[in-house]
Image (spheres, protein in one colour):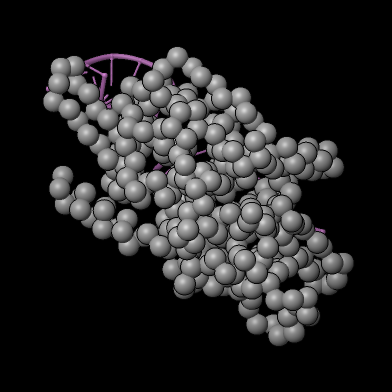
Amino acid sequence: MRSGNEGEVAAMAPKGMRVARTGVRANVRVTPGPCAHWSDQDADFIREILDLVGDKWSVLIIGTLAGGPTRYSDLAEAIPGISQRMLTLTLKQLQRDGLLIRTAYPEVPPRVEYSLTGLGNSLLSTVLELAAWSADHHAEIRRNQQTFDAGS
Amino acid sequence: MRSGNEGEVAAMAPKGMRVARTGVRANVRVTPGPCAHWSDQDADFIREILDLVGDKWSVLIIGTLAGGPTRYSDLAEAIPGISQRMLTLTLKQLQRDGLLIRTAYPEVPPRVEYSLTGLGNSLLSTVLELAAWSADHHAEIRRNQQTFDAGS
DNA sequence: CAGCATCCACCCCGATACTG
DNA sequence: CAGTATCGGGGTGGATGCTG
């Protein structure tokens, strides 16, 4: 599957995004000219996803909703440590971005269900890969950290 | 972006979602409750990548280093808006995690180059998919936000 | 050139209390 | 049940100045 191959990286770069291709060995730079820059637009894309999933709870919520429509209280229960405030706030954010839908049923006691939109679902699959990466490499990372901390 | 979703995670495990990938963790914890729960371990993986790339500059730095070994000053120039403090701090973090390597050349004036490790490169390709997702959907997201803001 | 140190503004988020 | 409102601590990160 996706190896950390740089040719592929360049290939998957979105139109408009200039990911500097790691040109072959060659001499690095002969000219003092600047190397690869991010366009402001590229940086904006990065910040946009970071705003979406970079916070503490969004990914957990989206991941939980992958199990299907879920009630507010079930979300609170499924996500250890989340406060009511953050659950409500993050849900509203994600709803605003169109990643999930809120459905309130006119009953007593009230029932509200949240479910992923197509957009939210497409983000989920991408984000899960990050989680998989973390699962695959977290041991290596911990070792790196300990080695680093030891030698300083 | 690759539209052919590979159904790998897209299967959206209904209950006890798990990132199969390596299948290292087969312990599907079924807790009393109607919906999927995150194990503490799963949540930890999420928080781990978030600690790595969830901050304001890591992704930009990693992306810039995709162009090959880069000097400190070139990084500062390539990443608009970053402060010296944050550049130094984030570089040290990433180095600690083993995502990049710092190489100091004993010259005057001093020259220091940063380059991605294999680990950093593998993360890059995953992260770029997120950026690609953002580029593909940011227009849709903006529309969603405006619609939401209008009706409230 | 490539940092480090300090100060401090902001704002994220948890805790708590209250409501429809 | 499903929120809202308010307070406050702590951490992130920008600005500035100094060093080897």
